[in-house]
Length: 116
Image (cartoon, rainbow, N blue to C red; front, side, top):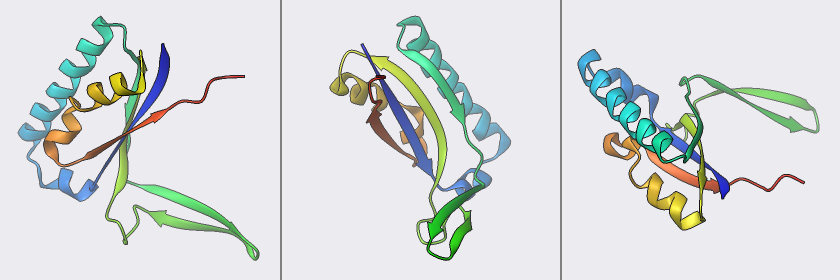
């Protein structure tokens, strides 16, 4: 078994358009999904992320801090999950059932490097 990160991305402003009731329904889907993964021994960790961020870049004149999310993409990281799966394909199959996809977010699957 190997670890895989699921990286969720979306537009934080879209969350603001949802009513509190709609957000509750979305969150209940996430809780059911995570509970199912826990029962199968596939869930290691997960956390939602706030829409605010800062990106640091090192340039010849020093370090620059850029406020995010970034205007050019309108996209921000919205959540992270770590799963333990049999294969990359297995992790992708699980990602395809992630509730983030139901409300316009994207899910990227990244294999974690083996510890040395």
